[in-house]
Image 1 (cartoon, helix red, strand yellow):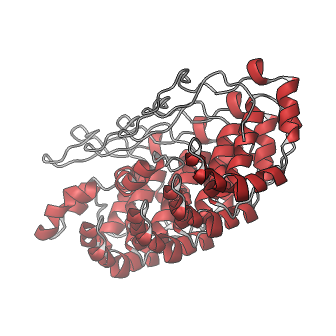
Image 2: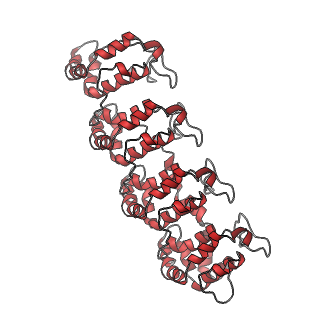
Image 3: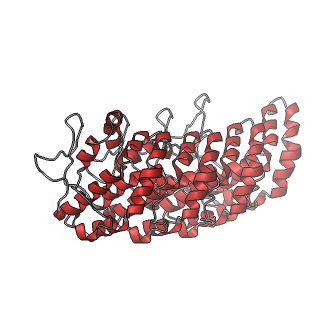
Length: 510
């Protein structure tokens, strides 16, 4: 079959000898060359029956042709390949309306399944490519540059394509189409997408629709299956997408594109205090976190890309709950949060929140640090850590009023001791001293001029955080500096190290 439609240039592999190779991102066809009546008439003349006959009889007979024996391979590609090729030419020639071929895609075929990427790329083009450092990219994205923007892909054509792909299409492609690629000489690597499940494809399409500002055109379900690894991991990727960060809290050894300055929060209301972020926060429930922790994250152990994310299952729902709360607080959208604000003090993370939540709601002006500690903002001699000017707020008062004697007892008797088995917070087991915790809260409330809001019963002198640390057993003092560095921002950075690296993974390329 000879396609009598002239090209502007040729897409050639590096090893091919091309007379007129296309430049980077140059299409083979343009309407200026092939947008003619003659081209339209030819496209209108080729039918689905013609493709079937060619694939089943014509191409296989090429095996005995001395000139065209290599063309026999097209018979193995199936009609889906030819159909998609004709569609791509018609699209570039701006003659899609002249095409006689069916526009239905057979997702039971390898080529049909793979079209979930090629057709998306064609109808919703990218501005740049997110590439790994070892990849050879024609048009790599700059730091923090999105692959898609509404200026390029916010079109009716992109919207129509997004509206044409259904949940059933994804299921068919994952269950039948991609697995069949294992026998395809060109696309055998695409079989791996079958193992990723529909959750990956769903989330990828959602991310494109979001960047193209066409989310309302998406036909796919927006419900996330948190029983899957990809669904569970979306608790990070979707939060990042809907509630973007201003900067990144990174460990010193991490390679950060946009590191936060000292005491700079990752999120601010100016960036993430949006209806879209609020709507997302309102969509995630306690049940979702439980499902992700109990089923979704543990299943990541068998995922070739996200195996490291299985560790989040061991952290429990308390970590995820507190992380979402911290983002909601920084985005000034705490009232939109659907998650329970009750803290489970029987867990290590819940017990440790007695420090992280106090720090978040009742921030310090400076830090009382030992000489051997590396402090970002050390207090001057006799300078109090807290002052009413900074923490004398209704928010701080409400938090102080929410913590009870029973909470402290539970944390000391159950929560902190359980930290001994926590890979990140094992040293926090040493904080299990009821008197010292009580006095630390009392001292903070006094400095914030909110003692009347304190729900805890208080006795004796008010203990400072430094005094609390000094009263730890000698063996625990050695671990104290590490614990100090594990306050919420540092903890988030370490626990999300896997997340930040995988967010930059370009999974939609082979």
